[in-house]
Length: 301
Image 1: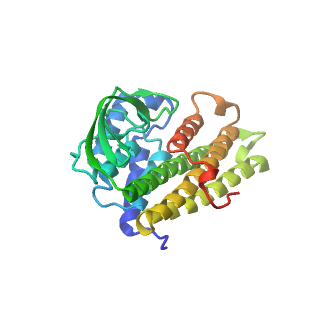
Image 2: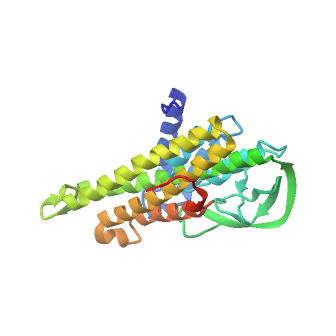
Image 3: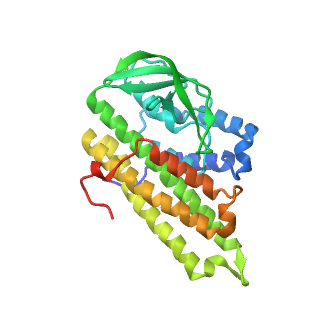
């Protein structure tokens, strides 16, 4: 396994990071800025990143974009759309804007009116109702509505590989949100002063930040192995790797986000602090295609 990114992959990650930095929400108030959301939607649509798999992109490249979008709290559909696109490439379905539907719910459906889901070996298209905000302030969900239409079929191995991609992409989103929460806490610790010194100079705060950084480093290792496995190992092996990544990243990210809130002190518990937005995103992404320890045959500390 070569863990180094290619020049093109570096460019893809940098482009996703710049888009998220330029048009992602810089504050909680920005989440209600409809003009910003419209510009972000147009830009993401123009990149073609929602059709990465149809265009031959690897699991690593999907994870690169998902991680940077999680880090920047990008609040227009990507995860649901790219997973729907991966299913559509196995069918004759038209390449129109669609999102994924899971258990009758489209978890990433802002601006989307069509979704696809899997039932057994059948790929089904279904309408989705108007999306509304929920616990995750950066992603809108919608219920499936109307009759389901069969648009193709998928083999067991193809579904297993898709499931591995879904777990890996959500793990990447979770890791990105954890990175964003740590960045937020680190910048705050550099600026906030108590007793004439920045709080980052105090050992208790520095230890929390260092612990968070160590958890992110571990998450990065398991995530990139899972992303690589999607295209290089058997579907069963890729699924196992993605399960480990999802569970590990979810547990680590929750702790990182909680540390970020603690570093912010009293302001960390207020609505205006972005730390809770990162935590919300982590918790909702953790609930998508959830993984339990019973599904994993190796030990996790």
